[in-house]
Length: 354
Image (cartoon, rainbow, N blue to C red):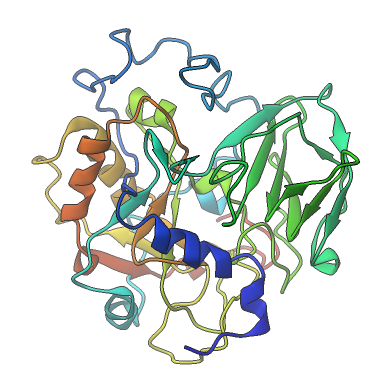
């Protein structure tokens, strides 16, 4: 397959990492409250308890649930339902191109794979977190920083990974999200990264048109990840992110960047929204998977990177029940439909919806 120079930005190594994780990665999502019988692999406490603190047994657990100003306002495109929106006219072609008989797989879970956690971790930071200078391969499309990087931050795939190596840094008090792609520490305390982006989580501003981010589509990563705290609470109220093997040399709102030189109109563009069809019966699935699938019916998911077909992304956590998450394999591509979100757009450079 021919690939463009743009594929060397966030997106190309994501495909390699996704393929390596294919045998073990799990799939999941979110939905309306389903709490009473949600199993907890590591605790018998109520799912409404305070989130667990980092510990030797669970070093990736965030110190508190992401809250404060939230991951963008409620009327931001990441956070609005798409149940009433029309099906995209090219939906059937897009679904076939990704794989209409391929099952969904979540790209996260508990435990390790090739020495690293399964999923994309994030770190909570604040004003006291040391700031680090970052040198970028794509400096012309990266926010210069500095970035609040604590000592030995969790890195996607682990510190020895040669994959995407995302670092996500959530400043609750400052209402900022800092994200890095292909991040490597340097001996002088600085960092080298492929690209980086900083977001005001109280606002709506998108990346400049044509710019990448720490993601191939020029989108933020953290707002589209499945987190254990949300599933345990019984509801995820935002869209998720997923990958597809082939994408078009195009992007649709709210994405800002493409990562392909393919112009086949049957291929989806970066940022294309999909939702799980409303006629999919969720009753046969376990409580945590029903939460996920319900969210996919209500909020859907955005195509954010090149990678394995129908791979959902989430945060690694030792509380995940991998066997339950494997139930997602039963959901196949034909049970999704592409959605036209253009009617929600107010301004092309804003994520605010009407």
